[in-house]
Image (cartoon, rainbow, N blue to C red; front, side):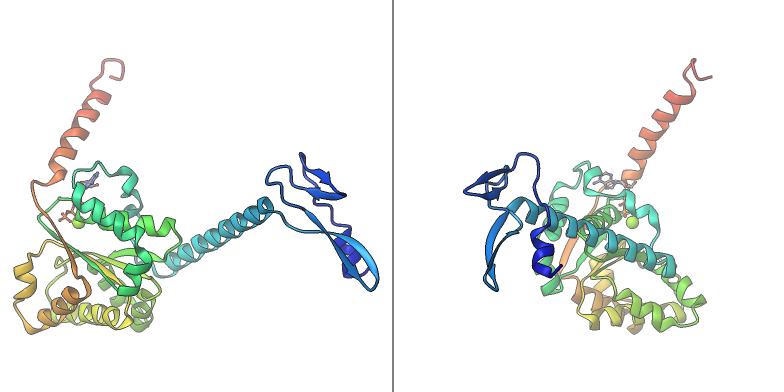
Length: 277
Ligand SMILES: Nc1ncnc2c1ncn2[C@@H]1O[C@H](COP(=O)(O)OP(=O)(O)OP(=O)(O)O)[C@@H](O)[C@H]1O
Ligand SMILES: [Mg+2]
């Protein structure tokens, strides 16, 4: 059987399809699912894809690509472990809208990702303790991951541990550029040592040279970032400020106190209920 005969014998009829002028027509989109072809003097009725089938094939391709993407991301995490997986819980879906303006900027950042990526625009979240900086940074990363963009969150204490025990430090630093968006949580909490600042500089400088966006969260003030105590920190913070032209200041009371009160209330309801005790 030659290729034409094989093609001609493919049955692409679905329930609801009908015939018009001897040609099979899709019952959903109304497009023909067959066409006449003349080959070496023989007329053959061959199947073609209608709009519905095209869409199904596109959707299936996207599903497969996303599945492969998830496998790749899981393999990277398995190999390098740069992310604390608790960050997956912080998403725009669980956003209570407390920082409505900052949230809106973050959602726009995700919506306009292609242009953000091209312009290499990072965000600096700075401000007081417990105000939602990590929450928004992680929400951006999770929203991009859902779109199939390689994005991740890490922090320097974790990276320093990995770098210290690694046989090949450069491999880890190179791996960070596998992520189109890298978020570094809590800049400034790492121990203050010559070794730490050298490694932090290595990571930030490599990111700056990669031309890829960086998000940073920190409790440091803009003044502390622009007037660091030593030249070493100046070289680090100067690059961070350059990489993060979008600055979002989050201030106010720590949200953890309110969360802790709500949790205490729930625990009381659960454990002090007569039915439970
Ligand atoms: N928009 C939000 N919607 C729901 N929960 C939030 C939101 N922002 C913050 N939270 C919750 O409030 C708590 C503190 O938020 P988060 O850890 O993001 O603060 P932070 O500014 O990073 O604090 P720190 O300076 O200590 O690192 C967390 O439990 C977080 O899940
Ligand atoms: Mg934080």
